Length: 174
Image 1 (cartoon, rainbow, N blue to C red):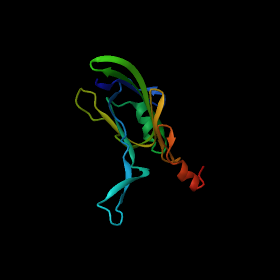
Image 2 (image 1 turned 90 degrees about the horizontal axis):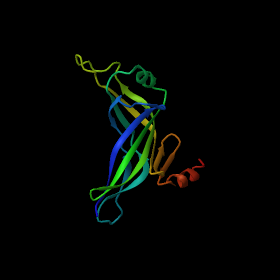
Image 3 (image 1 turned 90 degrees about the vertical axis):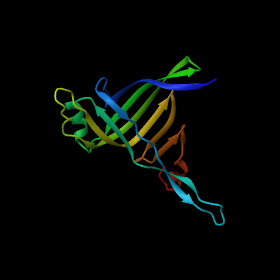
Image 4 (image 1 turned 45 degrees about the horizontal axis):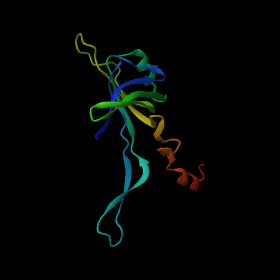
């Protein structure tokens, strides 16, 4: 039996307002773990271990036109915006759909790069790309927290387990 999950729909929200029919493309952040290279005395080779740090979390949204309200939200680089992607996943077993589950990806982000106006293409609506830097990302699927990373607040949870709890306690940050 082959099981697979397929994302079948999704709606992006910006500070609580839906962006339905405004978003042309959304690229979610990649979580890249930082690793430390180790080589033990007399070992056969090198290996890497995680050091509980992540690289910069960045995302990109391409809007299908210039929207003044979107520009107003992202124009202030000191203001954090909340992006929320609500999505549905169809579960298939062989070729039959066996279920439908929902997920939510939430990000706190500030604009890193935005254009002052969209690209002009004659009579066609222009693309309006916005590149964002995320300081927090949370992913909940089927009602269960998959991960929660909040860089400024030193929170790093995977499947509900706080990976930084011992480190924070040792530093007196609890």
